[in-house]
Image (cartoon, rainbow over all chains, first blue to last red; front, side, top):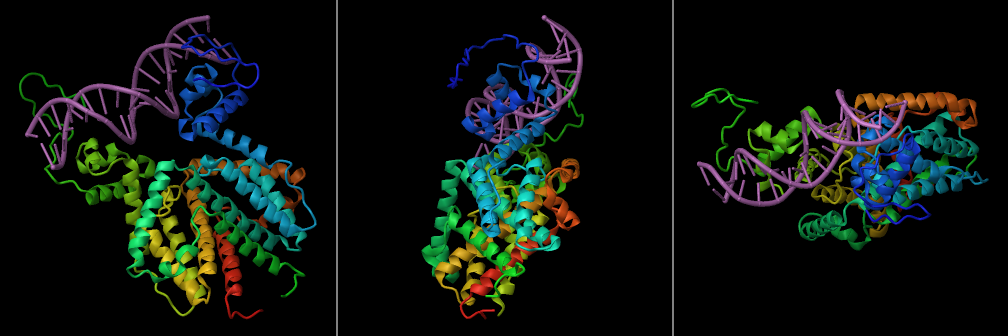
Length: 236
Length: 236
DNA sequence: ACCTGAACACCGTTCAAGT
DNA sequence: ACCTGAACACCGTTCAAGT
């Protein structure tokens, strides 16, 4: 309700039983409405009834365009990904920098839509585009297909999944997140006195799970190893 | 269901209207029942009514022992983790091997309970135990608190999250997984002919997302980098 | 052919009532 | 104090009926 619309479109808010015009629904229109709701109200509010309300349509009318909710979710994920990924990355003459840039792009995408982090989204069409870029960079690094394939998967594992975890924490309801923080703090204070010497030893130098330095360190370490193994790399 | 109470007292078999004895319920008993259901029927079948049926108790009686479902889920996750992690790892004189062993332990745990992979489970009590071990290994590697903290987080990011993704795929309903496989194959065949030269180039050398070699490669690369940076490591 | 309405089989959760 | 029963406010989904 009370949706602020950019543009001239006006939503007359009413309990209207007005029948929707024929053929006024489409996959694209539905996905757009789904995106609006997901970003405005959160993913757990994205229901067929909410989309119906947003479109002034009956919730069950969506079943003519999507087999079930899963199909709609995948369509939405693909839409967002395509928007974030296409045409942004261009190969340079520094293949390591390219890999790093791509990692950050994907990471940023997850953090922009953190609620989608826990959604299944592998083997989707956009995956092919990402993989093509990664493989291209490794190829320019001088690797053969075998190493390139392996390292591309290794990078993918780290980037996509580390981003997922971080985004998932971000997507948690603030209350739950703080509660976890508290639990952690309490436990840590208690454990320090017992037999957790290394936890005390590291003290404040252990970055928070939400601290991006953890993820950046992992990426650096991984890329360092790969760069070192590139054919023609300086042996030190 | 519809027991016809045609006059007088009814002795017909009834679906367990037997009242549960007082104090016969506890958090532990409930968590055990929850584990049974989760492992037998899958996580999506783990509902309060299912637990109630398993225990011959009324679904709402669980609310006396758990504030809500989230609290029950966390209790279950903690139980499984504690069982997998405690007392298994012992430090050796090879700190890199220790880190690798721990990574595999955590990875195995996720793959044993793949359905829990997508559940929030950071900053739980068992995290402190894992972190203590990781930090201990890095400390024996000669790192100071600052590097140890950073690298511990880096490893954690990779291990936990890569395992999550892999387990998540494993936890998908077989139908959905195969459907994704199909989509991927179709796209790949089509894309190969277009402008995805590197995907064609890598051919069959790109491991499947489910192939454990991707994750193992990532782990090796990360540990290599860390070992190389250890104070006193051979410069090549 | 497309959209609607009513209905079904579930959820988690609350709360007054039983014992 | 602990367990139960009924009820509430939701879900996704099916299907016959309207237009």
